[in-house]
Image (cartoon, rainbow, N blue to C red; front, top):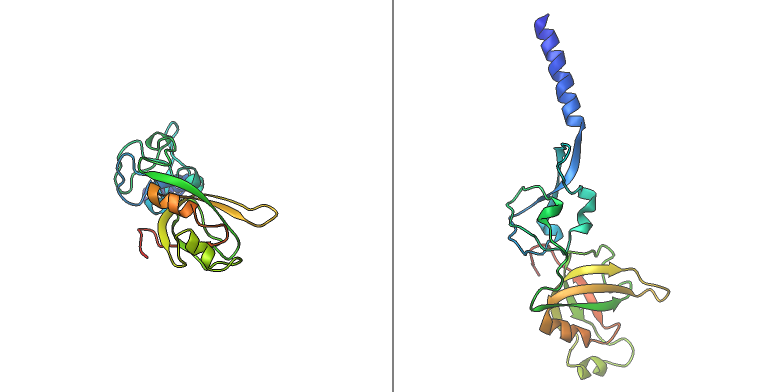
Length: 191
């Protein structure tokens, strides 16, 4: 009889303790202080919460993308609001450039934190010489990270903010409108 009561009590305790679990953000890999968070740095895990412990809910992942770490943390560490600093984009030696792209020039899944390659495409209106005049032949490319995506207005142009080295940002800014495509890359920088 005592064994049955203990088993039932244990089952009730286990059931109630697992019901209070919520998905929160944790680090998928070690990150040093100053590291700008990308989606590849984050993962969601379910934990039991305790009063007074400030954790960042998994559904708020977009709020930390592009922000620097205020402290160094190891793989698996739970992310707290104090561990993430104020947005510091761009960091020294980098720049943010806005590019206007139309449907078909970028994947619809594009979001902040995605690594991309910006590629000059062939001229669509004034001939191939217009891109050559700017010094960027079709096929010229630059690696960047998406900082933000703003949905287009009536002309269906979507503005994508790209973080890349300062020299490359100046070059990307010279590419005429409509002659740039964004190619999403795998996290970690593969081409």
